[in-house]
Length: 86
Image (cartoon, rainbow, N blue to C red; front, side):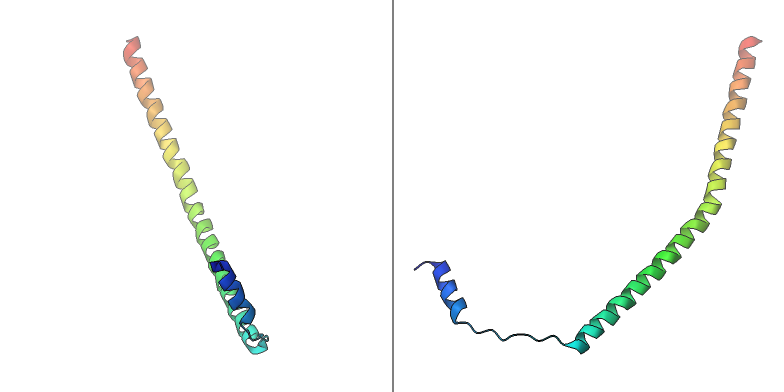
């Protein structure tokens, strides 16, 4: 007799009761899931709105900073070229 034979023998003699579905519990679980999904959807919508408003502020600031950097580099290059030609 091996260990797997011992487990098979015990499984054959073991009587398990059959479970019946509990409609009240199932409805509570469904309601809980729906509530959690609703909270998750609202949270995602709120996060998307904050991200959208953040981009409305950050995008022009980023473009403006790039323009200032570009103009500064252009002026510096022009001044260096003037020094070379004089």
